[in-house]
Image (cartoon, rainbow, N blue to C red; front, top):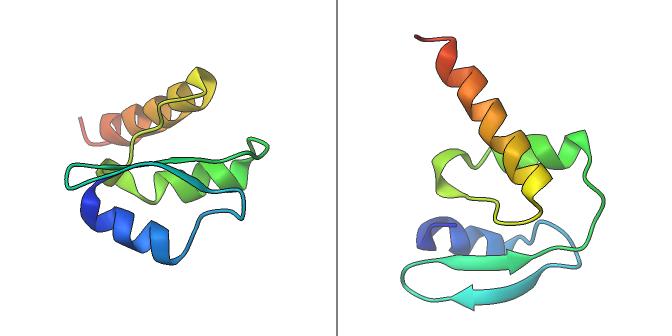
Length: 75
């Protein structure tokens, strides 16, 4: 997550299980313990290019596919 977006996430956590893993000038990494739901997917997609899912791979793949589908609508 970008540092700017990270400030927002620290102020308004995504979930009560949110744990900060890395917090520096380059990035903010958080860990969440929750079920993968459509609501979570939509929330994460709302961060656009300012966020990258690292794990689990299945969620990262869903995010990537959703962004590819959106991109292909304009191609």
